[in-house]
Image 1 (tube, one colour):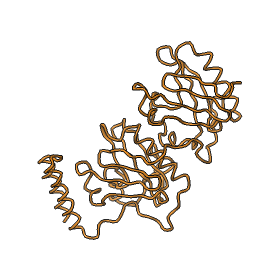
Image 2 (cartoon, rainbow, N blue to C red):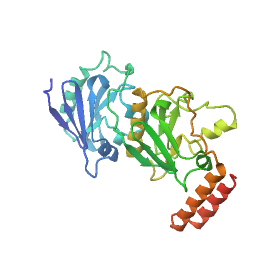
Image 3 (cartoon, helix red, strand yellow):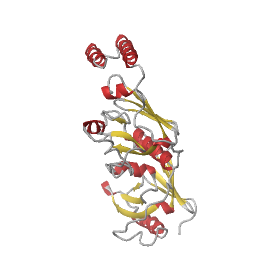
Image 4 (cartoon, rainbow, N blue to C red):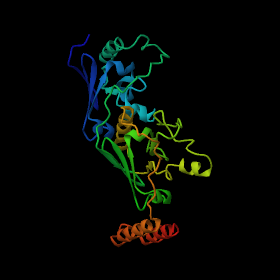
Length: 318
């Protein structure tokens, strides 16, 4: 059996073995994945693990891979299998020649798993609560169509003049209380249709990738529901794009929100709609947006073509 404080050093992380947990410390060098740098360290209770394996890695390396139970880690719940191997925080890549050492620690960890945890096809029982801490708020990132921020109790979306759809302009900037949400969806920005979507309690789950047991399909009948199901039209969502909402920013953000939601934030007494109310005076709201758009144009932040197009869209709302 290992001794308290034993440390196994890998290429981008180290695992420190403690009496009831494994403390994973991630490297911060320029070659370390940015997600690891953002996470810094994670304490993983033994009860959060479902299996431990050892396998050959690339170029002769050895991979010690721990898997967590469903529901034990908000980060992995939100990721929902979308992370590439190099971004998996539970893969410790060891230099060549460390097979024996890796097998020793893997065997020790297996001895702490629930009965059957080392068997092929074993399906672990989901955790009743998160056992691994989520990244701490405040957090924020820039999406293609706006900025997202989370202070621990509220999520805010502030739309971009050049990226947000007309539907989002009409709805206005959004603020969602944790207690009014039932979950969050995250689709990796490394795909062509990445997004982060909040799931208000009023709507049933969709079961899509990264849904974390909650979604938005079925919000209402008809064409309007189909339109709002598209993240670029849904004021409860921000969309990613090339250079926007990178994994190391948007995934910890989504995990922190999910942890706050599942942690029992105060529920609203009455159902809350998915979007904030539209301004009482639409004409004044449009005029204000055109004025701000003009300021961006004067500052050189919006091209002539963008200014003309966006202004025409705003005037069409009157």
